[in-house]
Length: 117
View (cartoon, rainbow, N blue to C red):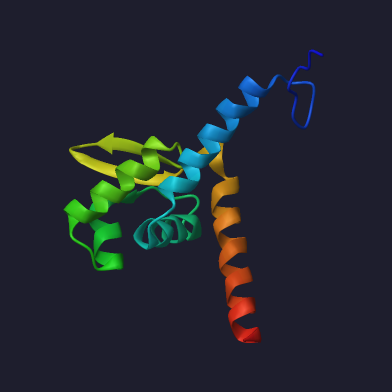
């Protein structure tokens, strides 16, 4: 008996595995509290690109720490970066507007569940 493996659609499992892998990479990049705070900060400034120095100051981090986390979020295509006059400016990527919404929903859900305890 021969069976093809399909999941959720008529798309072969291999394509879904690639999507699942990318999803895991995005979620893994959010697996640090500093990155969540960076994303929350940038999400509140949707129409503005913020320089690394300002992000560092607002979160109380060194520029080195901030840059490391920003690069991880950029590599996951969550953030976009504009380099101008020797400075780097970050914003939420237009391709991934759903990620800040997901994080916001998770934070709200956790807050509600904590209050129920």
